[in-house]
Image 1 (cartoon, helix red, strand yellow):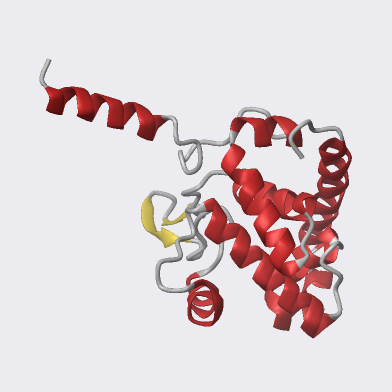
Image 2: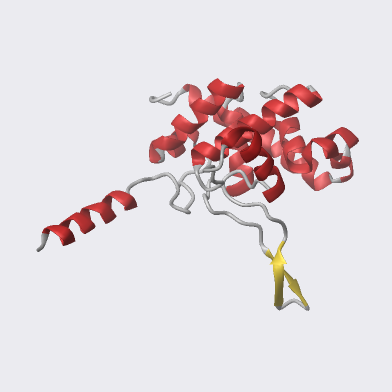
Length: 195
C-alpha cells in the first residue's frame, strides 16, 4: 500500500471520529452526561459560551435540544403546494441553533466574524449566548430563565416585547418543556464526571 493511500485512509478515519458536526443526533438525548461524553467538543463550546455570556450550560443544551435535537445541519421542513409540490422551506433556520439568516448575519457582523457557521457547535453556542445575553439586557430576562429565554428566542425580542407568544398556546407549552429540560439537564450535570 502506498504512503499516499495510507495517509488518505488515516485522514478519513480521523475525520469520521471528529464527533462535532456529524449531522446525527447523539444517542441519549435525555441524558446530559451521555451527550457530553459522546461529544466532548460540546462541553468546551457550552463552557466557553457560559464563561463569555453567563448562559448556563443546561439552558444552552435545552434550547439546542428543542431547536435541532443536536443535529448540526438541521433545517425546517419543506412547504408543499397541493400537497406534493415543494415550494421552499418553512423558514431560513439552519444548524444547531436554528438561527434565521437575518439574525445570523447580524451576529456575524456584530460578534461572530466572517468565518462563523451555524453547523459548528462553538459558533452556534456563541450565537445563543450572545442572543440570550442581549435578551437579558434588553428585556430583563435572566439568562438562567430557560422558559422565557426560549420565548424570546423563538418569537424574537420584538415579538416577546409585544407578547405575541401569549396567543400561541403550543409555544407556551414548548417553552415550558424547554424550562423543564433545562432543570433536568442541570440536575444531571451535577453528577457528570467530566464537568
